[in-house]
Image (cartoon, rainbow, N blue to C red; front, side, top):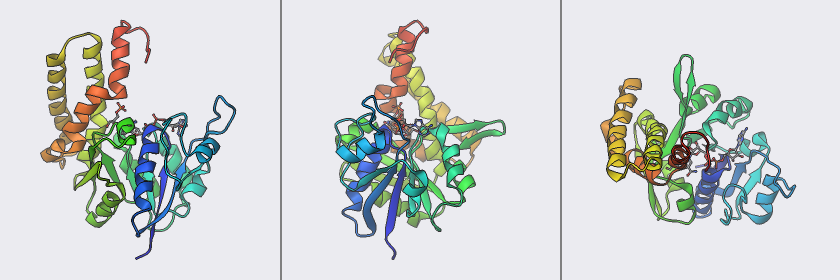
Amino acid sequence: HAKNRVAVIGSGNWGCVASRLIASNTTKLPSFYDEVRMWVFEEVLLTGNKLSESINQVNENCKYLPGIKLGANVIADPDLENAVKDANMLVFVTPHQFVEGICKKLVGKLRLGAQAISLIKGMEVKTEGPCMISKLITDILGINCCVLMGANIASEIAVEKFSEATIGYKKDKEVAIRWAKLFTMPYFLVSIVEDIEGVELCGTLKNVVAIAAGLVDGLDMGNNTKAAIMRIGLREMCAFSKLLFPSVRDNTFFESCGVADLITTCLGGRNRRVAEAFARNGGKRFLV
Ligand code: NAD
Ligand code: 13P
């Protein structure tokens, strides 16, 4: 079997932690080349240095994940085409609004037989209706795309605190298993589920519930109310998902991507935090 080469598209908080996880595994698994190219949306730091150069100098993203070494085999690359050109496994982990533009730049630039996975929690809402990010990637690039979602607050995984994750796939179980191998660590347990829409919708819709949970916190409404929001929110996530995709399975909501991600995001996520700040300021200003 030919060796696999991985590129990560995105280098924010979760992008860096995912690169670190992957890079630790590629050095140990013989079926992967060690090097992990990480595409960086170039920014100039307050020091005047470029972010990508700074990452390569200190092996750390001082803006989005300060204090965490990424692994010597993570190479930051601000050139999108160059970052992906040799890779046959592409990990998408940017904020969702940038995916369409990135994919358009990559048309005709990928290796034959390339596979993708999306770690992005969100969807594009177009005039024709909602479009999942994995579908956007598949439609624009003509490649298969799995998803990885779960109760995964990046800052906790960065310091190797235990969590679980769920990979959603469509038909090709072998590919899903290959992705699971790439991500699994003793502190990061990955399961696979043949329900890509269900897994991706869980990761997307829990953000709406987390905003409601943050408002409850900001208004000091208490834990019982917050638990009610989470329970009703989970039920609505399930109903809404099935309305969009009747194939979505109930069991998916009991995986890490479902109830576990909902809980962790309503307790410690950024969506919760921004909503709490909004409520505490009388709905006037965002102070996070
Ligand atoms: P982030 O919010 O930490 O950082 C934003 C990133 O976007 C930075 O890398 C920035 O350079 C980049 N960026 C800014 N402008 C851009 C542009 N025009 N084009 C492309 N990139 C640009 O990012 P993150 O936390 O890595 O989030 C990425 C995805 O991962 C999101 O969909 C999020 O829901 C998901 N996610 C995040 C976490 C977490 O704990 N942070 C956990 C699970 C999933
Ligand atoms: P936030 O984007 O709300 O921080 O959620 C992170 C997350 O997805 C945890 O699994």
